[in-house]
Length: 114
Image (cartoon, rainbow, N blue to C red):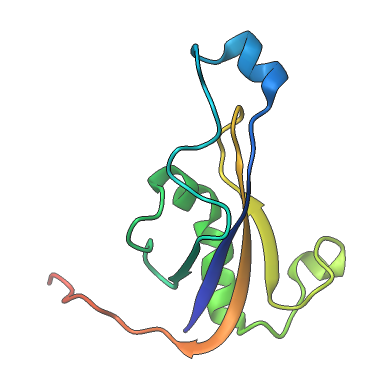
C-alpha cells in the first residue's frame, strides 16, 4: 500500500442554495483551506474533516493500491493516471480535493487491538 497525497484545490459556496437553505452568515468551509496538503492511506489524516473523509476515502484506498498506473473508470472520467478529483458531501459549501497516488510506502502507526 502506498500513501496518497490529498490537496485542497478549492473551497466553494453555492450562494443560491445558501441563500435559500443556509444558516445566516454561512460561508465557505471553516475547516479546510485551499492549498492544504495531507497524506493518507488506510486512515484519515490528522486534522482532516471527518465528513470529507467519508466522502473520499474509497478513492484514497483505490489509489493507495493501484500505485497510480491506471485511469479511474476506464479513462472516461480523469485523463491523468493516478489522479482523482473529488469533493466532500456538503451541498452548500463543497470542498474540492485532488488525490494523487505516490510511490511512498504507507506505514501503520498504531498498534491494532486484538
